[in-house]
Image (cartoon, rainbow, N blue to C red; front, side, top):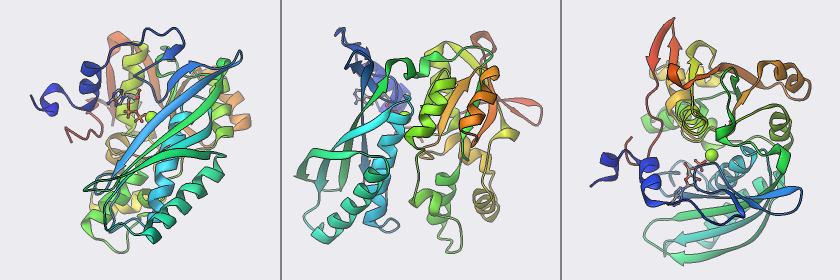
Length: 320
Ligand code: ADP
Ligand code: MG
């Protein structure tokens, strides 16, 4: 059977894995990080993300510096999505025989640039050879037990919020693929995840949290599945930057589609009791309300121009 027939990457992971019986494991497969016992006050967080040449990055569009940066930002984003702080990293490389030392030096400059922004120490890895360049970064972090925010913590009545703006990465990818020289591409080439201070401010007030790696639709679906709820996403309230809007105009497409079904914006999506919003705004205000968590019986849907519309699947390596 093909993976697409089974339903894609998440269906495959569900089929292949079983729950850990180790009492030290608080959360295994199924969230942005694994969560394990660490100290009296803190849990340890562990996440791994892989980038493959011509899939997650293109050697004709990305500089090696940008590839290294993106790898670190995408992993740190998963630690932040748990309410945590990143600390240590391991980088595993599979390189081609014609990869140059200079290329790798620049890639590591990008990696260290992002690592120093997030106060992460690279403390190991593995190096081997293969037919395409593959990079796998593991990041380990920590979170105060009271600040842990799982995908499963959403409650009906919570507002759904997103930080910053969405659709930037997909907009840039489409501009690059169509070969427009004058379009907006930075959102794809130089994605930024949030900071630990921002994630902490959100965690203090929010219930569930997840980062945007596969699109808003997919992330809200994960929250609903894990929390046993439904949700409404308001199409008109999805925050889109001026640059993304212009790129979408250039391509004659709807930027909200990029936000919902594109990936790799590395913003944070969280569910928050409405009464906590003013408190969060005192510390951090770069977020928008885009919907509401509903009882499971109401399902997951988009409200677009007053009509209920189904939420499609997000980016999936085997289905898209
Ligand atoms: P994210 O996009 O937040 O990095 P993923 O969608 O990659 O998360 O993974 C979702 C969950 O599935 C995570 O808990 C991850 O650790 C787990 N997972 C992914 N691939 C595998 C695998 N091959 N075996 C076991 N667990 C996996
Ligand atoms: Mg994630």
